[in-house]
Image 1 (cartoon, helix red, strand yellow):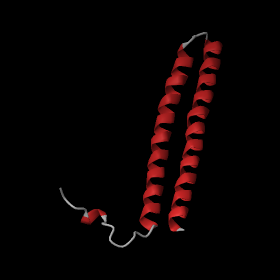
Image 2 (cartoon, helix red, strand yellow; image 1 turned 90 degrees about the horizontal axis):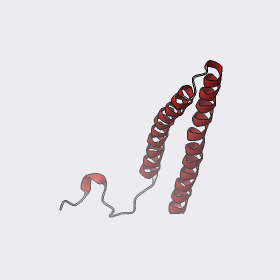
Image 3 (cartoon, one colour; image 1 turned 60 degrees about the vertical axis):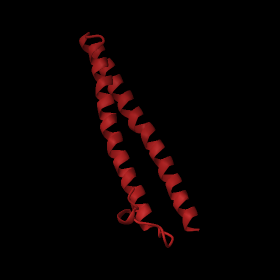
Image 4 (cartoon, one colour; image 1 turned 135 degrees about the horizontal axis):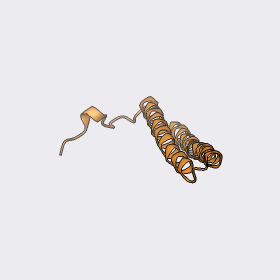
Length: 98
């Protein structure tokens, strides 16, 4: 039963991460690209603000994705620490050396 719960938790963490991945990339891309396009139209600077908006959205999305991935890794590690190990399973400190 504990294995099923752990797998189910991992599954939902993965689904949550995939959903967050989508909107973390899409929202900055759409907003900054449209903002760049509007500024280009207003100041007649085609395509400089548009390109700047796209590059800025890539930077913002990358930073946000790194933070989200770090958070997901922490959550997975916490779940793994809470799950009891079967007897005889070596811990990290007791791994056999080759």
